[in-house]
Image (cartoon, rainbow, N blue to C red):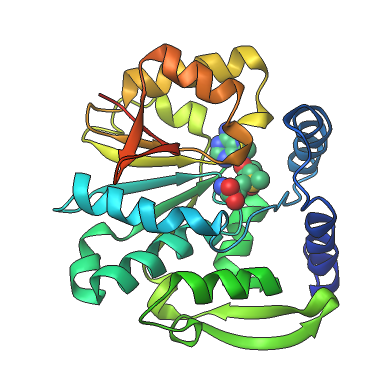
Length: 263
Ligand SMILES: C[S@@+](CC[C@H](N)C(=O)[O-])C[C@H]1O[C@@H](n2cnc3c(N)ncnc32)[C@H](O)[C@@H]1O
């Protein structure tokens, strides 16, 4: 589906909703990976992201960042899609720390292999679902979404809303087309401990390529770095990461299934 009108974008979200019951990893792996690869080849966005995706995760994530990187850190967000995730991190850190103290974590380097995804980010438009609005409300204690978004249209299919990303948020990201595999071969990158996100995107790779990716991540990320994965990486990817030497992070005594540390 090409993103050249609100309607087609809405259709894409409807697809997202129809998949929202979280297929088993096997189904997701085979079906979605093929669809996703074809979509990228046709230069279409394979979206499937959300603001505060996994709503219960971001408080622990914020604590982890503040504890491990109190003086700031560079975030590399690969698989940014429309960059809902970088916006989530920025909003959460500002909400927890205040604008001034959160500054040291920005700008977030937002990368995606898809040219269309990067174009979409640069359009500064997001369509969000009702559950996303609720998860913003749950996660942000001190600020509202009006600080970051102008509402352009409401009442789209399934009550979705079209938002324009305000400069207060957009100025804190640096979008760029990039392939995580290629970047890991670039010796000028990742020269200090960092936080790298590659969430819900490992299914684009074959099992062998996933092993190579885990290996390259372990070799290239400096000790003290954190790697953040998503819910579709909870089985085979998590296993490979542990085998390669990554350790599951612990926050307030709770093991974190989405956060792996490079010891
Ligand atoms: C399902 S979205 C995940 C969005 C977001 N990370 C999340 O979890 O909500 C997957 C994204 O991964 C991107 N992607 C796939 N292979 C990639 C690669 N090798 N390097 C960077 N991005 C990639 C796709 O273009 C797509 O936008």
